[in-house]
Image (cartoon, rainbow, N blue to C red; front, side, top):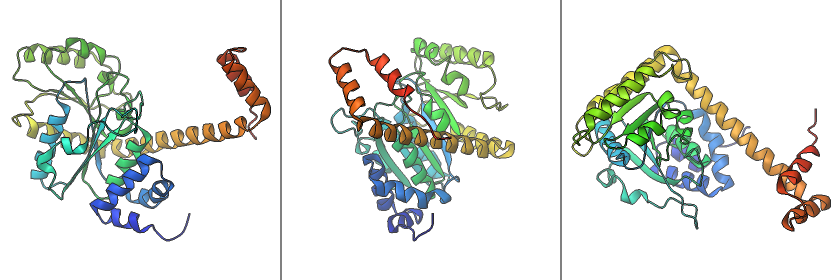
Length: 322
């Protein structure tokens, strides 16, 4: 698709924070101007190292991200942060605002922090989160960190988004360690025990070490051996080692071709999601305009037919063009 680049997209590519913030707002609100801008931004993406931070509630993920940003800035890197929070049931926006997070970085021009709502997604990430990451990537941030809410093993969307997924745990949450075993445990790239100055830290480290020893290979087939690190993020202890591990993983991905492979997988995932949503929306619009479908809907509302049979009836009437 040819044509002049949107002025706001050009400003975002030039690194203008206000332009990036406005684009992300458009994307959250479903404004068609946001989708149009993404077409201009997309060729400028694919350079940032995308880092996912996830784990159970109470693991201190926000404090860990705050410390990570400080260390990355000391190393001269520009950092974008998307902090995913529960959505307001009224506005759909994040309940916790970015003003409540990481205040010491607010005046740093090399840091962009944005809170976004999950919009009820079981995987923890809304479509707008994926789009916002593309905006920050196009803006030239070296590291883009996505911090998830922490809802357990359902939160696997982050694995599909990030190059490096960091699983955070804390002492005293043994049940949560078992909860991530079947999901994130298999897909994490780096494991962290935060608040490692607490009682029980050694036991938690041993549990995770055993589980890492027993885990199968990463679903991608990667032969990366995930490190297990102890940190105290409130004091900055172990943060430099965590950034070193992230750098090592990034180098491993570049050397093995995994960086491009994960980038391609993410693009494929995004394409399929857009195709699914667009097709479903169009089918719904066409179907609900037909009188016989309206009658079927009314039959469901009046409980003369169950919704399962009604849906099967409608799907059976769909004929895709060859």
